[in-house]
Amino acid sequence: MEDKWQEAYEFAVEVARKAGAEIRKAGDSEIKVNTKSSSVDLVTQTDQRVEKIIFSALKGKFGEGCHRFIGEESTVDSCVLTDKPTWIIDPVDGTTNFVHGFPFVAVSIAFAVNKELEFGVVYSCMEDKMYKARRGQGAFCDDEPIYVSDVKEIKKSIIISEHGTDRSPEKVKKIFSTMQKILCIPVHGLRGSGTAATNMCLVACGAVEAFFEIGIHCWDIAAGAVIVREAGGIILDVNGGPFDLMSRRMVSANNEIIANRIIKEIEIFPSPRDDGK
Ligand code: IPD
Image (cartoon, rainbow, N blue to C red; front, side):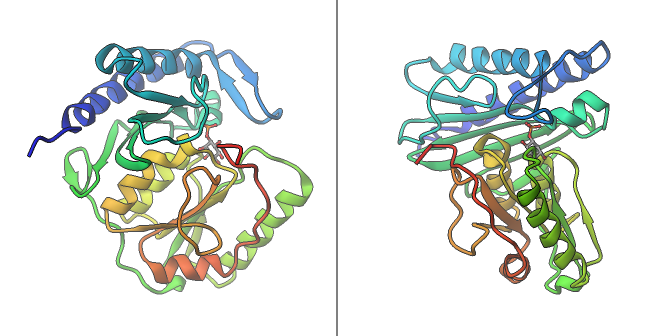
């Protein structure tokens, strides 16, 4: 049977690697910072430039008319997922890290067809680690297969969460209250790399048991979602229901036991959906 998307998958890896090299180079010179939704929601010229580089490579190869494109910095189409082949991209996941020189920054490229994620590529460019996965074909880091951890006891786990970019006191209170409850289960530790895409890869390769966040966007997590699933993990909504890419909330975990134990502690707060529904 014709392997329809293999070429697109391989091209995405190539493009992610080139984009990562651009980010590394840009980090050596002065970084110009602007803000978006709040004073802590940062964007740089590098985010915008790298997104243009990725989009023009993909459009050049696959044609603008045939594929749709959703990107953090320039969402050309709306965030509504259709059945058309759709690229979902975050050129610089971990912009705050990039601005501060905190060494975790990722290029995240996902591809969906018929509203289903087909493959995901996350290039952690400062560490030079290439994570990738195609539906049904396993997950890899630098071409080595990766698997989630087999820990089933929450008390033996490390959990990742992030604070996002919304600093309204009510939300921050809920985020910290959730973290306090999880920390006091007790778990071995709480962590956060500052990039959702990398956090998901850390779940996928078994370095941590789970990562959850409310307020992330589809471009932060689309590629990571394929990688976690293909590494043997699961993705759920923060209420325990099915994962919805546009809902801006998710729990990714090594297994259902760990996911559900965390879900018990999560204090949910509203976050407007990416597709505006
Ligand atoms: C952010 C990172 C961060 C997460 C935020 C995201 P950006 O993405 O993934 O880990 O906590 O919610 O917005 O803005 O650096 O691409």
